[in-house]
Amino acid sequence: MAKRTLVLRFPPHLVNEAITYRLVKDYGLAINILSARVKPQEEGNVVIGVEGEKTKIEEGVDYLKRLGVKIQPLVQDILWNQEECTHCTLCIPLCPTEAFILNRESMEVSFDKERCIACGLCVKVCPYHALELLLG
Amino acid sequence: MAKTIDEIKERIKKGQVVVVTAEEMIDLVDKEGIKKAARKVDVVTTATFGPMCSSGIFINFGHSSPKIKVEKVWLNEVPAYAGLAAVDVYLGATELQERDPANRVYPGEFRYGGGHVIEDLVAGKDINLKATAYGTDCYPRKELETMVNIKDLNEVTLFNPRNGYQNYNVAVNTSDRVIYTYMGLLEPHLGNANYCSAGQLSPLLNDPLYEVIGIGTRIFLGGGVGYIAWWGTQHNPGVGRGDNEVPRVEAGTMATIGDAKMMNPKYLRGTSMRGYGVTLSVGLGVPIPVLNERVAKFTAVRDEEIYAPIVDYGREANQFLGEVNYKQLRSGKVIIKGKEVSTGGISSYKRAREIAGILKKWIKEGKFFLTQPVAKFPGKESEYVFRPLRERR
Ligand code: SF4
Ligand code: SF4
Image (tube, rainbow over all chains, first blue to last red; front, side, top):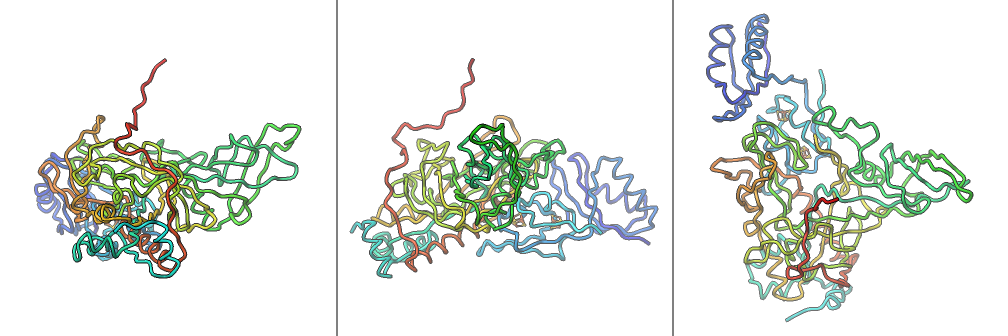
């Protein structure tokens, strides 16, 4: 049995539920939805944990790609360098798992590493290079 | 009873001055009313911290032997402007490093540029200086390459032609694709909304008609002391305003100047906007002397009374989609076209609050004295407008 975390970006015409159903039914994968940001008529952002036979996971991934789902590569780890962070809050609305927490009283940003699934999106947007991808 | 700046200076000298930040002023006016607050408070400190593209430094690096009249110049491989006297140069915040792929690899990373050189220089790091020249009888040298450090340079003057925008757009994207803008990454279909103002803490929003802030006002600039040199480029005082005189779109701006040798890299940060370019984030703090009740009332402005336009950056015409106030923006969620949208900041409210606090401390400790502006910015009745370019042959 193998385990993987996948960050999926759905084009608006695909429906999330149907796809997870197919992954379970056709590929025998156990799916655990870690975070989902899907609204009608929009690109969805879903993070899933999949468990199953290694070859089946690969087939499942191919199936998703054929459908037009974009799969973001996952990296090992994200490093938040507090010293570099200016607390601008630019990353707040973008993180799919709400790993950045903004205290609205102090307007101070903190980072909950436990929630981060290392999709890498925040690394792209942080204007101060406060976030770093640590490749495994 | 009205006060004068001289009286306030006297109170700073005697250690009797009463200073509050623009946030504290709101609470005070709430509790004690405008009249009492105006009598009690001498100075309200305001501040902002965010990317300000129209920023840069003038440097005079001294004469080499033999002398060179610099024609082209690079600092850490970032080109600067040398069309000035022999060894005077100007480095702009948004200049890219030579060979930066820019957006040829889209969206470009823009990891290092003018803003970063400024930050590194101010941080005391050695900087590579390269220059070339055509050579003259009086300046025979044609090439120069050396390391320089801010402490050895003659003048390093931060001069920012436009800082501290009075209000700004809230950027969204209704198109079908992700776009990368100077307002950050904007997700399609109203995926996020980015705003860029310290709202109730922001300098010009606390003096909406430029009545007390003006040319010659001494300020906190990049962690040191600076001055307002002029009104800023694109200053546009005649825009629509609320009943409280606060502009409902981007309006006034200021040009600032100061000695970069006295500044702190924490408040002058090189900034990389993915897919857009590099810039410099500047910390700015402006003291407002509470000369009378009118000033007191203006400085008590709160986030919920300041409205910003929501602008669609995903369409060429930059369509206007409505208005929101800064209280809503800072709450984290706003409703746009019936949809709940999460907000992100470009300007750091936390840093702004910090700067307002530092300036307050400086004034209380008698280290920072207020100045009387020597001239005013063009006001809302002045017919001074920001015009678009009309192309012609
Ligand atoms: S990498 Fe960044 S955006 Fe992605 S989950 Fe972690 S914190 Fe959030
Ligand atoms: S985008 Fe970067 S600097 Fe801004 S709050 Fe997030 S981590 Fe901090």
